[in-house]
Image (cartoon, rainbow, N blue to C red; front, side, top):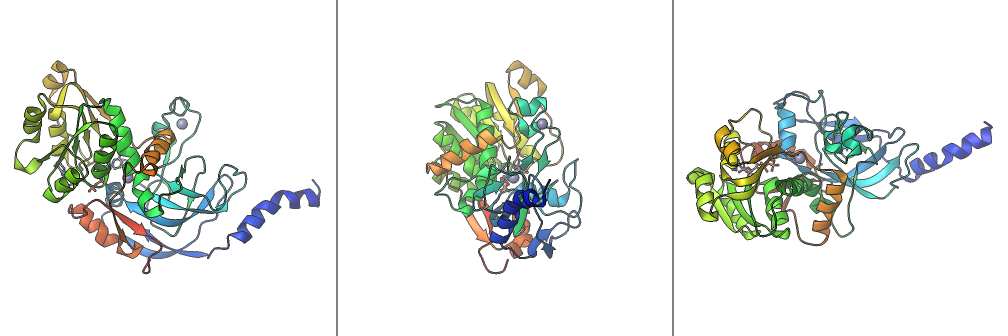
Length: 367
Ligand code: NAD
Ligand code: ZN
Ligand code: ZN
């Protein structure tokens, strides 16, 4: 290979790097120890390697999963130290060698499903969410609680024009997860969907379900969140602290909900959710509190109830979930905070004190 052809091949990357001049350092919120406050650090801005892109974060939602991650709640733990955040939205500012499917300036979302292998039996059947080689944003890969992050261009979300980065952020986890979970209940228009937990995930679930023509019952332990669910279109609401929500729901709906979506990070909600399910109905488990819950075997068997898990969503689900928002049918209710407020936000999330979704806004001072 001549010197000339070498130069020609590397020229586009160099030109890109020059065009998108960026600082060498960035602010990031880092989990150094499980269960301890995150530390705000100055870190090197990562460099995109072959097949990677660099994204300059504009906004990143704070999901209850980030709290589970920082607490080391689950059997498979992230390697310390790590940067959480899997509802990141930003502009592509750096392109690694060989990347052709996104370009500088594109607005993308970097979701929980950071990447997958693309060739296993699950990837080939469009179930990349359960790929054994999947990587997870803000968990096995550094996430969006930082001014810059790397991403795999094959798995980023493409944010429709018309959505701001702040309003798009919750959609790339809370939105896609609830949209997919509702689909997995197989509930049909006109049938009942019970949504247990109407917080970050649940307030979007109510909107997706209404847009999909379902009758919605919201269940929570917080009257403020229930009132909000009602404003968003819930047909029925129950406070699970005020009595057995399964019995009340069965009475009001004449036999229970055709589909149940459990987003509550609380084990008791899972037992109650199975109890809310109508004969032949499907109860979809989405919330991820650590632990196990008892399944009433006789009821599940004799009523032919399906109990199944649902894990975020595929790239196809992502495009569909974003399209609902682009069409104005779903809108995340957001509270903006700077990155520097992350520990207070986690504290409030742990105590149920976040009304819907906090989004870290990187355009604010104090980051
Ligand atoms: P959140 O804290 O914003 O909302 C949780 C809601 O559940 C709150 O409104 C709270 O009041 C309510 N709640 C608590 N206990 C309850 C009970 N006993 N009955 C009814 N409601 C109750 O959290 P979030 O960001 O919506 O996340 C919820 C859960 O979903 C977390 O465990 C998170 O890890 C999980 N999650 C799973 C997936 C997935 O792919 N399966 C994706 C994202 C989040
Ligand atoms: Zn999430
Ligand atoms: Zn795979």
